[in-house]
Length: 184
Image (cartoon, one colour):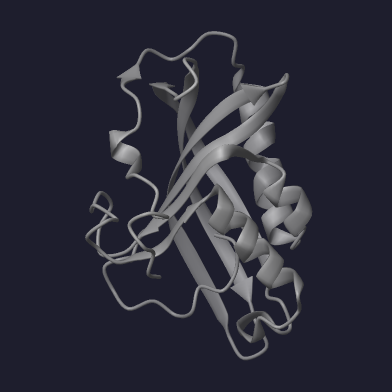
């Protein structure tokens, strides 16, 4: 993916300082949010999945390592909120032939950890979470198993949990990967 410097989001590592885990978050509500986000992606509920994101969101799937600067290294996905919306509009046209017909997907999320609080641009503190995942993709010609670690940043917006940041580090992102044509 190529983005001009004007539309390219800043690397997530430079966003806000890390601090203590903010109060007011329960493990159960966070786990339920992560499970819902996974279910919406697995079931191709693009409107529901897109509605989970904040206006300043960043969705990043690095390639070739976990913490490479996406401004100078290739990323599998490196989308700001506008690009997430564009990607969802394209998928909903039915003309994304890499997913025609769509894959059958199921993912398992585990090892959910509260990692830290992360200052956000609005003066608040987002909850940073880490979780492992396995995703099983079944397509017409083959099946694929995907695994990795996801870092999420969650924020309360008008009393609702929203996704401000999602970084998916695939276990084998340093090797050539098959077409990743679904929401990881």
